[in-house]
Length: 118
Image (tube, rainbow, N blue to C red; front, side, top):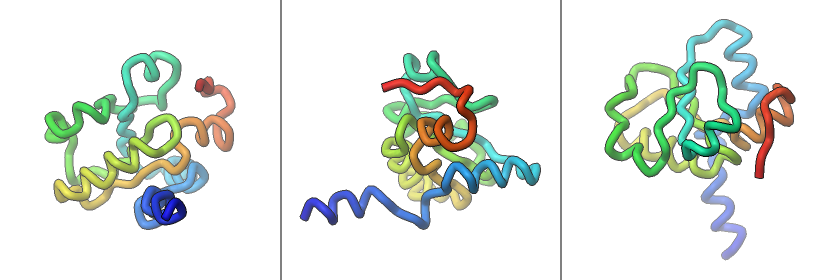
């Protein structure tokens, strides 16, 4: 039972690894980063140019996003942003993915200059 709970949180069809996201950026692909963390977290670190809409506000504010854009949602560890990704898919956003492992994985695997926090 516990395994199934965690399995449902992990959805390879909705996740991109930090390396995959970096490759997109290196190829010059235009992506919109959606930061669904709380304001205090954004004050610690963020990805350049990210749109900030806390997960708790996404239901009222998702219209601020263009459903035609490629959107990569992220949070601290990737759990909240996976929920945001699923929500946006339900709202007919076709090109939205989750940054697997969140900004913490980005810091560990791609850019160590991005401060980590607990």
